[in-house]
Length: 91
Image 1 (cartoon, rainbow, N blue to C red):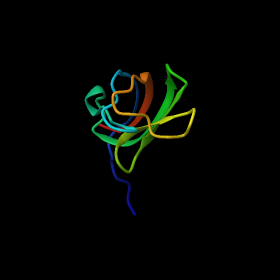
Image 2 (cartoon, helix red, strand yellow; image 1 turned 135 degrees about the vertical axis):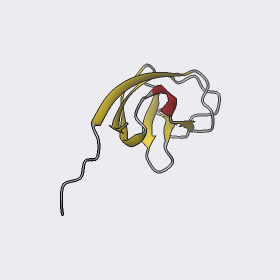
Image 3 (cartoon, helix red, strand yellow; image 1 turned 90 degrees about the vertical axis):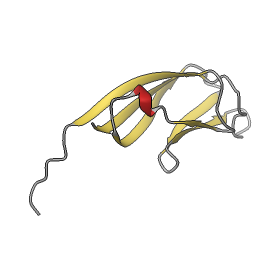
Image 4 (cartoon, one colour; image 1 turned 30 degrees about the vertical axis):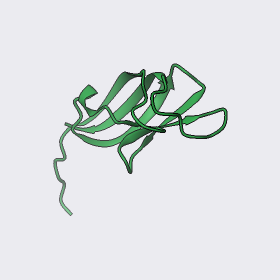
């Protein structure tokens, strides 16, 4: 198989402030915050409030938010605080 030019692979770090969770246990991924159009993956690398666990759900392309105290989904409207995300992909 010959080589293919798949474009330049990019890595960006973005910080978002989830001051009101959009849905129960989920926040849409903020694609507008990054210049990466073809996202290969995303990893939460830091967050302001340790009482919530925030992860990237690649199947639903959203951030899942769980309350660490009891393991349940965080309620809609919850102030999760700032979340730092490493995004990888191509423009």
